[in-house]
Image 1 (cartoon, rainbow, N blue to C red):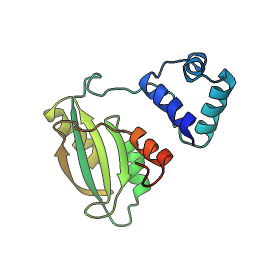
Image 2 (cartoon, rainbow, N blue to C red):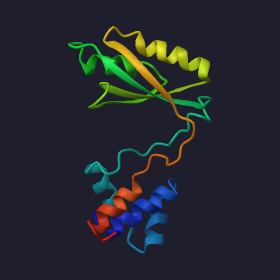
Image 3 (cartoon, one colour):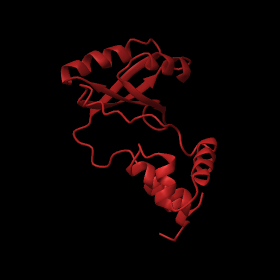
Length: 158
């Protein structure tokens, strides 16, 4: 990854609907160069997707919560993950170290609706218990561009 890749990714992050031709014009490089860079970044897994980013709140789910799940010994994370994947309000789940075995980010239509979501999560026999933390406000939204900038600059280049 070099400065051109980083500049291209910033441009796409700022204007996700920009076309390859317009990106090439703004960057001052050939259209084929932009397309080749995008193909390379996608093949390397740097670019994970091209779909729109959806806002759960705008879809009617203003409550976000994080569930710490304890999984029954021998139940396995895979079967619990399969169960969670069937619940639309579960946005993501990751296995963790420390207290608990898995974190799940969930959304709900209200605090009352959150109880329904938690009940759906806990309906799997592989989950022993959960604790819930409700998010009040997003202070820093999910982001990767600063990480990319730091990796392109290199350690200590800042």
